[in-house]
Image (cartoon, rainbow, N blue to C red; front, side, top):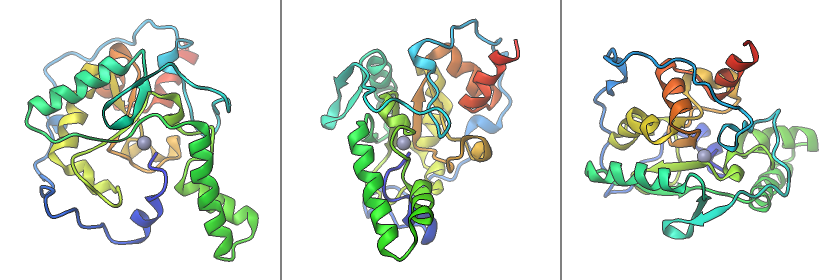
Length: 236
Ligand SMILES: [Zn+2]
């Protein structure tokens, strides 16, 4: 989840990108075309494994949860068990001539707490009583423990400097390519446009989550969100 600028992206018109950023490529992605590959069967996996861990408003991470971490470019960190997959994903995009910027990857509980409390204070200062301020803040910044970034398996990827992230980024050449190819590297679009009622999170075309190649292929082929995928195993 984008930690701090989301409110502006909702309340204002989309912000212009920097002068050097390419205009969004409005060519429809190949996702609208029928796939020649047969859809994979539901993978036989153990949902207790680390890569399937669900984090949302109902499934909180412990305050002291910290994955094994490996440093990435730009002084960022990612779960050591999935860092090679992320590096391969990024390298593949760059080999296509695309500009890839890792905007946010692992975020510690304390960092999330700082971001949330800052937003909460801002809302209270604007005159809202505590409960309303809390609710307003939680729509903008993930409540500590509910952010996938604390898992170390989520990354926000963009193609240039943006003051605010918004849905229009879904049409950039980079994110079209990444959406089409993420499953091959074990990543999914975690907060799809048509699943906002289930995820509780706005459409975030820049936010990718590692779940491994098997699960990613199934999720992306069938247009699911992670909550729906996990539910499929409960019904077995
Ligand atoms: Zn994110």
